[in-house]
Length: 61
Image (cartoon, one colour):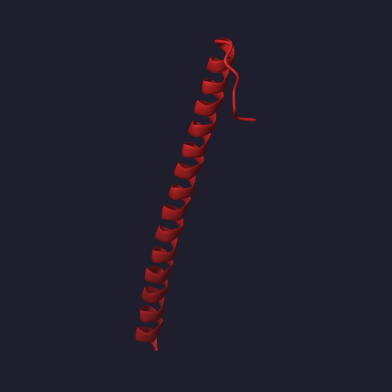
């Protein structure tokens, strides 16, 4: 009975460790995607402002 409880505990710890590692990895990926999207938005805004400052018409709405 004691051995079974220890094995069950080890199984739970390993399973939860793997689930936690996957969750952290996915969160890191989402944060990177959000950062990349934010960078692209800032770059587009900068390009539009630069074009407008030089009197060019933008084709992006």
